[in-house]
Image (cartoon, rainbow, N blue to C red; front, side):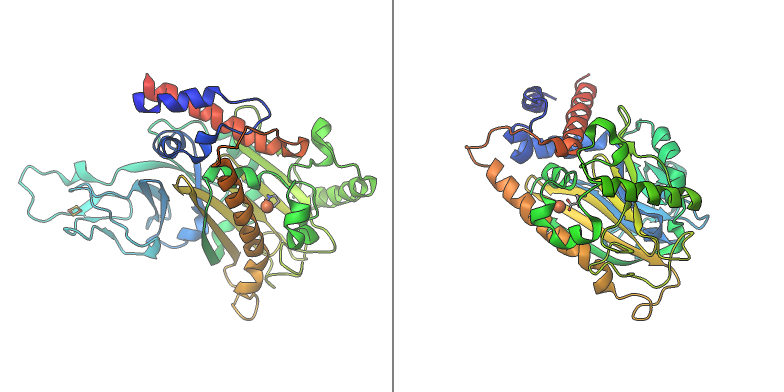
Length: 416
Ligand code: 3BY
Ligand code: FES
Ligand code: FE
């Protein structure tokens, strides 16, 4: 792939502790490379099991020119298929989400079962074998109710991720939740800048007053007390509070030591205390849904927070789950999809108000969208130079390192 030689040269300009060269953020070739090569080589978070709650529910996950159908079968299995008909290739699912008895191509009505098998194709030659023309599958893994897909025929292992985080996520029983709000927000920035922005709270004091009053400033890269060297929180009262909380969490069976992107892996998980008496991640810190979820019978002032490279983060609270996925749409456009989930029996207007539940992160997303746009615009200028990350931007660097490493590996494979 001679056309990606320029990308290789740019990746070689990576500087330890510094941002990437300009063209990797803003260039059209980098966008083509990311969507055609790099992002196809890794696991991507697509949606939760609750987005496809019932048989026939489908969810279309798009990355650049690619689209994947995630669909629940009658046997309750969740599967993924390329959204391209085995007849002459037309797109099958046109809506982003929906429920269907079968998957029918709108062009000539070839019809597939929810398991991808071709059921009907009119007036084909006698020797045509339906069995050879089922939908092409895409690798899918369900990690405690979070659905990841990988477009590579030989996906990297996901076993360590599952072993580390699956059981803590499973406590929230995501299958028994329902998606009550889904925001599709297009940010005017490259997807890597939206990711970098997510991986630090260096901008939070000035940029997110609402979020900070509920989350405090710790946990997002400022380091939790057990972070050792990376710990730059110098607050004895905070440390004591976390110690006490940790004992409670252990009793409740909801504690696990911080897991932070083990070597070569792509997951981070922490239980974080909330601040100022907040019991959940809502705009006023008050319950966002009266029906609690998972094992919780009382409000519990913490979140189980999960971040994955290269495109997701999730906060699981005692009354709701909020989950974020990123996908690049153009070199300077990124879809940030945020979904809020509550107990399946919760009643709108009685137990929860969709606007209240979404307000905190909707506000925060808008603020972050503005920062990411400014970042993209400034990097587009000839005045841009690769800049140094702050100490508390360690997780930004972790993301950048993951990107560079995965990019080099995927380039090697396509060049081999
Ligand atoms: O960037 C954000 O808005 C979120 C909140 C704190 C850091 N990050 C996870
Ligand atoms: Fe799908 Fe013809 S392209 S039925
Ligand atoms: Fe932010």
